Amino acid sequence: MEHFDAIILGAGAAGLMSALTAGQRGRRVLLLDHADRPGKKILISGGGRCNFTNIQAVPDRFLSSNRHFAKSALGRYTAQDFLDLVERHRIAWHEKTLGQLFCDGSSRQIVEMLLDECARGNVDVRCEHRITSIEKPDDFHVTTDRGIFAAPSVVIATGGPSIPKMGATGFGYDIARQFGLKVVEPRPALVPLTLAGEDMVFRGLSGIAVDSITRCNGAHFREASLFTHRGLSGPAILQISSYWRHGDTITMDMLPDRDAAAMLLDTKRARPRVQIHTLLGELLPDRLAELIREPLGLKGELANIPDKALRTAGERLNGWRFVPNGSEGFAKAEVTVGGVDTAGLSSQTMEARKVPGLYFIGEAVDVTGWLGGYNFQWAWASGVAAGQVA
Image 1 (tube, helix red, strand yellow):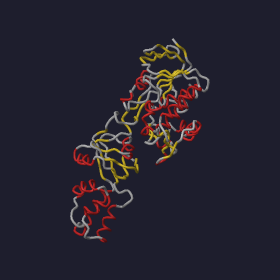
Image 2: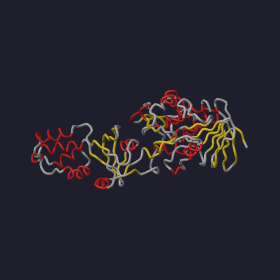
Image 3: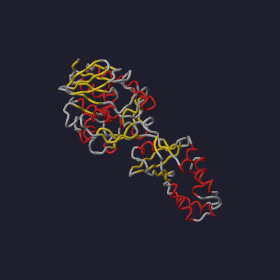
Image 4: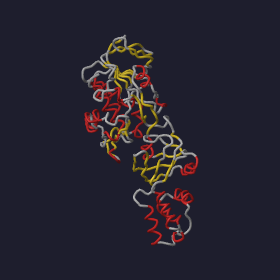
């Protein structure tokens, strides 16, 4: 049996960050992962360029049963702190929309940076180790298919079940339950939604995108919505999916910069002879304009359409109601909502309150960020929080 000061399970974003932080404190650290190489989810992120953080990563842009839990870690390790690390490694980067920061080159640069920092801390990184059990007779004993390792501290950075083709599982939840911690029901987040029933007609618009404001359960996002062969996707839909629950209605404002009812009435007075299909075609993509004309109950010249019908149509354009019948599940979800209940963890250190030496970080925890680098920032921040004490 090999002995270490800390064993970190999971060589993703959070695990690598925790390992390098602990290692650079002088701790003897073992980082284990079942995959054949570290950082596999980092490598595919951001279209291969890694949206590594967001300069607007403030706590109210994270979902959790305890909305205050993330404040401490995010406040102590900020997006600027990670950006400073990126710049020390001379990785070129650029800002895209809404504060999203990407590598100019490849996401591989971020993985190499983290591994270089692990090497500085003499972290022992071992891949292709399948963990079969964790026990705590005194120190923690981590049994793998390649041997048994012991340490007084174990950090669980195994993520959630999103993107199972990358090897993602609910392993971290099993360990939490084993040691008496509760788990908030995990569900797919940042995921496309599916349509059925009357809404199925919109699946015929596959590939059409529209600038929109989507709303659900008090949240709203102004970005593109994309119609797909199964339902709805695009940034606005992925964002709102984290707030959506089965049975909920999503509203989509297809004309977010206009009072559609007022615009229709004004146009009727200014251009009474214009055909309604012509006007809708000026406002929306042609295929979408043609599809919604019948549900709106409008046809012919504006002059012949009653004002009441135009007001009703305008209200629908500013708040089209969809009732998704589901999502595309963990297979297509970028992250997971839910996870290890924060009530059982210290917000300062990520340590389990009732199990000294046991830590949970990253996606395994019931903290989920918005689309656009927020979840990476939670991985960095929670990783540092645990790595400073584990």
